[in-house]
Image (cartoon, rainbow, N blue to C red):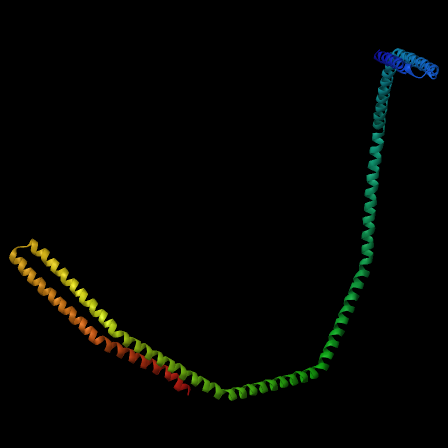
Length: 324
């Protein structure tokens, strides 16, 4: 029914299109009007025929649809029945042929096993038959190989015996030649050493003297520098000692004053006298020590430096005199 409706609608659309086309071309020139009109009429009639044919096809399709549906359903049932029959026949055939296949398979397995047993027996017989020949061939090959090795060893021994004197003579000649070269090289080294010994000895002696002289000069310069700086050091040391002694006297006086403030008059006087006397003694002792140190410092320092310089120069000069 749907197909019929679609065909009717398409035919109506075709007729309306033809009518519109005819109305559009109504204003064409007067010379082509009869031909165009005839063509339009023919086209309209052709469209009506198409519509009728489409309607007839739609009616025929609607009329034959139930029959086609029933035929298709019948065909499907028939096909399914055939498949069922075929499956049943295959199952029956399989069931019927199973014992025969099983027997054939069993017979084939027995036959294959018998063939394998026969082949193994034949291989064993062949091996047993060829064993003595193989053993004899192996023994013969071993004897032949041993004989070849003996011959090769004998040939090597003969060649070694033949070449031994020549090798010994060559080795002896090489040893003599090498020893002669070593003797010549030793003689040349000895001559070169003897030739260069006086020059080396003189250079070594000159170097030792020059070094000893440098050491003596350095020691003398150090001693002079020490002697030059001694008075300044002595004055500084003396000034420091006086300054220190004065500080100690002031400290002692302050201590005595503090003690006098807190003690009775007699005790204060005695302590003050004792403190002053003790402070004066300490000042004198410090001054005496400073004077003694100042008096003996330059002489001791100079003598010690001079002695050390002489001792060092003597030590340096000793190897040089021994080298001479």
